[in-house]
Amino acid sequence: MAMTRRQFLGRSGMAAGGILGAGFFGDVLTHPAHAQTIGDRYHINVLLDGGNDWLNTLVPVDDGGTGALRSNYEQARDSLRIPASDLIIPLGPSLVDANTGSQLGLHPALGGIASLYASGKVAILQNVGYPNPNLSHDTSRKIWQFSSRTLNEPTGWLGRHLESQYGLADIKCFSVGSDPREYFQTATNILSAGRVTSLAFPTDYRNSSDTSAKLGAMTALAQSAVARAEPGETEIAATLAATLLASQSYPALDAAYEAERPVFDGYYNALGTGFARDLHQVAMTIRAVEQGVENVSTRFFRVRNGGYDTHSEQGAGIPGGRHYDLHKEVGDAIELFFADLEVQDSTLAGRVTMNVYSEFSRRIKQNDSGTDHGSTGGVFVIGGNVNGGLYGNHADIHEDSLVGGNTVYSQDPANPHRSIDFRDIHGTLLLGHIGADPAAVAAILPAETGDQNEHWTAPDFELPFL
Image (cartoon, rainbow, N blue to C red; front, top):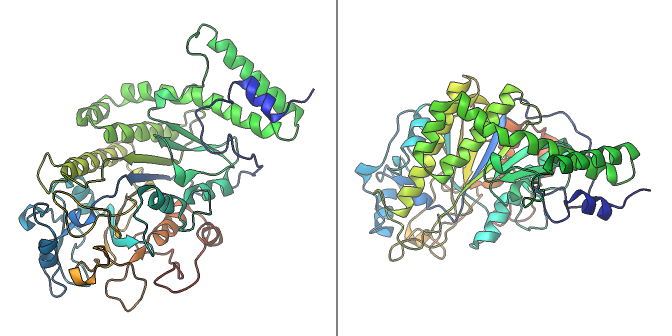
């Protein structure tokens, strides 16, 4: 007798939860697996959660020819001001703002990013945002992750790519941590866990003596459902089978990496930060894919580092301040991660691109000891295939130009402080690195209509950082 979908879920033990995200419990659709456009490349989305203060991330060193950026910065920042002499001006591509002629420098804690920038692996995109910015953490985070201001699109921008390329039996995304909304969709599955060792199929942990028998029964149940080819059952069975295979393959990656790469394993552990441990999970998974480990085929990753909601005790450029410690954690871990890739395979860093963003920046003028929610900020795109350098125009931070204390987004070509829309970055990554074709990118990121300063009307998916 054919089972209903509810019966199948109940008997498989998956009705209460599992290790996979969107796709398992949503409406099940059938999607053929098309060509894997990303090929032998990898993409990593990194969220600096809480609203990173971009003005203290990429800081004016001087006033340059016009614009008085350093003077305006010093007027807005008192206890949070970073002395020009403390800023890092890395070798390599120029960090002079083309519009104002001001020299810019990186926060003193970002030595790891500065090192990668000097080797041409970092594109710094400044004055990035979207029209009519929303200063709610959750709403703005969703806008970035969905790549949509209306939030009517319940799927993530990368999720829409995944659902066009893969089916329920494919597992191409590993989120180190929860809530990977940029990958949400209903066509394929997402691994989500803090560590690869946690990716175990849910069985009764209170009685583990018969775990093998339970897993064998689930496998047989899935195979039986596939053989019957009943509507709905086949798709659910494919998901169950993929889950079982992943749960039997991923946990072993940790011990394999430790045995094969003890030196770098020690480096990650020595950093002793959560973000370093998260990137360690990505590194060991990529290594397994490169080695052809069975049932490990992840090409997309998501990592988060929280704590950037610095309304108070933000600190400036001195160790011990919240912003300093957050930046050092991120910069040091990313530098180690790319060093790991280079040693693993000289071509690997050129096949990995990392997109580092935050849901918004902070207000230009500081409050007592921190900064409130702001608007336009910046993005780091990092990888061996990146055209390193500084892109975009510095935001106008003169106090008379601010609205509600925040910088103004503008797409007016005549505006010397014209902004970069974050969706142009997403489209460039899809087209230039992930390998989606132009028609698919246009469908994933449809343009808006209306006034150019109120809506994103002229997409540009060929930004020169790739």
